[in-house]
Length: 614
Image (tube, rainbow, N blue to C red; front, top):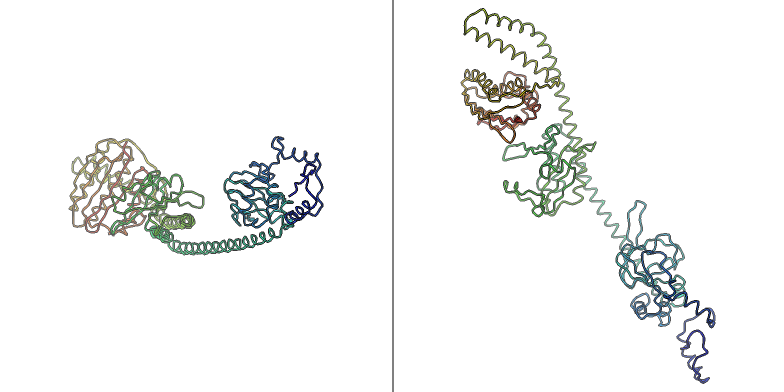
């Protein structure tokens, strides 16, 4: 084959030899539209200056600025890479060599954009190493991957074929080595090499099929996701209907928890509500046949942490997570495998409760479960607030009626009671009899007690809360109140057993706490109509003074125990306003204390109070 360019130094051949060589080479030379002209020495030098690495003027990639490029020439590596590609299969050696000499090798890191959408089609890229993705973004900002191409593939050829701007974005998904081929060289090869055009058509057909499969898979995936979303929406609608069908708070909490566990296929769970006043989480759990109220401080444990921070805690493997405390499992015998803790927020974004769900059936809790509980909590918080508002409205209306009645009573009896009190004082002074003096003192005490009780009811109905806090000797207070209570108990065949071991000072409102103890003792007396035993116990307990009233009476059913602190709730009495225990709880809450009740039918009742120690 004759060399291109100047032929002055070609070896001398005979005419016939020259003709034979020319005939043989005619079959191998590429077809050219223009007659070949000898390249001048100046042109040759100009080309050398433009491409020589020593000149420092080699061309850089125009689209992928993060990469590096060098002109390869017709290197064996470039030729080998072209031959390995299905697109360039069966091309003549001269055509491959010409393409290889026109390519620029480029190195690009992960994430490099080879070309962007709507850019000018100036190059075709041949992938030597690594892979790229062809992608477009929807008007919603979602990226759709149309294809992924690896070693031996060409990308960017469509714009060269149809002459339009780029219709997609090409991004390196690996560290990539590519050959950049100018558009005009690729276009010339397509016109001159019918094999290349045929191979390109086959490649486009294959890519179209793969694109069809991708679109179908995408549609199927979207259909499955839509069906799943519709199913979750149906569950949410059913759950919303269920939890909004009652205004009873205890029933409502049970229905919310049932909807949560059933909808995300959890084995069991707990729903805590936040007590803002005491900074505690509380819930009621079933232990055997009884409902037991449990409390824990905000910030303690996983549920407390969620209540404090609002974070979602999703633990796929409980025993391999240091945040999980296995002590509860050891006590109950239950095995926790995975856990989901999520806050319940109201419409203002305030945390009002915490979901703690355990052991998803057949797997672990996922993103869809979190989204469902988040949506459910919005409905649940509204239902809880509605139930509370409804209860408050009913209670306030009844309290208002009682308040009006108490106001009338106080107005009507204040003068007669004042007169009785004065007469009792006069009788005490003039009688000169010790026994009569004691009776007069009792009359004065009962008058004061009656007036104070009526005033306390009036204050409760009006929502008035005031404390006269003073530091008192707790043992002395207990001795005085028990001495007074014992007289009343003895008349009803009830034996008082004192186990008052606490000795120390406590800050409290003496008069109100005395009335609390008297109210509880009176209820215990009424629960033992045939007589019995009332045991009163005091002792220190973790920074509190624990006071227990333990009777041997009839006890109370679970339904009564759950509602004992509600206004107007009475049980086993023919007299009383039903406000006694509500007032008791209000007084203890005002003291930042806590009250608990243990009771079993036929076995008596324990009232447990805890007051902060000084």
